Image (cartoon, rainbow, N blue to C red):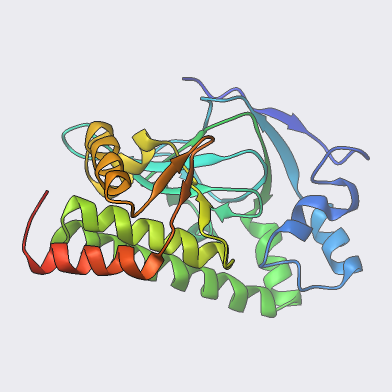
Length: 250
């Protein structure tokens, strides 16, 4: 898949550049004054990616911060065996490439692929550094986000290392509930079963089998459009704890 970026300049009406639309989505910027966000928005370019197109590849040198304006982007790496390992899914308001801000000319270790038609805002390292000097609070927000990602990465490593597949799935579902911040027992899976399998270090077939097993036991209910109903989260977590204690690697 070749990169076929369609670049739009700072013309009125182009998503990211008009009214700082993209900047307003991003937690590292949206705490600023409207005028400051507009100024930052004027320095970004917009890339239109079609589903399946690559934003960047491992081994490429870069000095750009990428912000997802619309669509979804999958960040993944390839093991020595050639097997894909999903790192994260980026949704509107999420960003990647932040390390290039602190290490100019950083070489990407991961791949970034559009999961659907997407609009990406990109900002060059020199522009972002100028804004960091002008508005130091941006740096604190970036560090906060990097810290969150490190914590999630450590949790994920621990899950794959010590938990059985069923417990990994339940931990993931619990984290989805936590992120949704709602009391609602219905959550939307943020990725396909194929990507979820890659993320949890298993196969799509195993994911489907485990979901069916959990559903038979009344712990979850699979709904259309990648939605999962969890009648009782505490009961689901207790089941995972008992399964882990029993030492069953399903």
